[in-house]
Image (cartoon, rainbow, N blue to C red; front, side, top):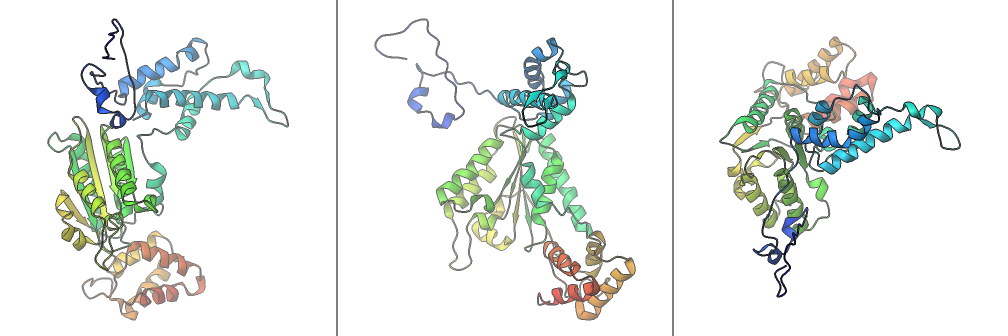
Length: 390
């Protein structure tokens, strides 16, 4: 491009998805000197892209009248141009499948001339085609498959605080980055609450960063995977990342103690790094070892902390039992609570004197175990709680 024999009147355009992998020598002045980032299209841009990809369908009368391009543009947040093209092709295949003869030999039905691509075809295509920089829907739904049980005012307060953080990131001009730490004993529902807040935000980019997805990773691979999720979030105007189980991500063990310093430094940098201009990021992290984060200097980075307590009163436990419908009637449920009170777990009014201390996740597991013995459900539940050493 800038050799001895100069080439005049030639324009060279290069394209890449990974600018970080291009040699800096190619990016110097005189070579590929003008750099333009083509970000994900906004809603106005998506309307134009969908209009282009469906123009022939409309001209040939294949698109049904119930297809609303404005609606499709609103539903395809963080879709790239190629992904929108794939969405249109997928919708076409759904429409075409209605006119395929079912039998031993594949064939086209006689009414194929009446084929129309309708709204339901696009809705089915949206379930099939997902954006690379979109929502980790299945992962988030998996951690909240039991839903949120409002066993106390503290649960409502945590969810309300989460809504305020979501609104702050969306509307505030001073805080494009907000990081929140949910901490509490194991099994208290921290991950489910964090995922619920993320899902309720309706942000176009939602990712769940968990140690489960990094089993077998080396230290360098783990650092690269964490960094990639944060880099991907910077491409979306609104993003939320749920960082689950910080101490497991850090490979922390109290024997030694031992932890991964590379992962720690990576998290400390990324949790505090402000996103690029016109980009906003909400980070929700969870931890069962709050004192460890203090010792490592990680807790100071978070803008806010919310404690997720365990169930410590029979009143809260009764709410859980009612929610999961463990007993066929309210009388049976009250008798079970009375049995727990007689076993020394306190009463429904005095939380301070109660020995009860169990996470909602562990309690749900005990409930399902007790459900397997219908004739002695209350006794089985009481024995399970006493088996925890309470």
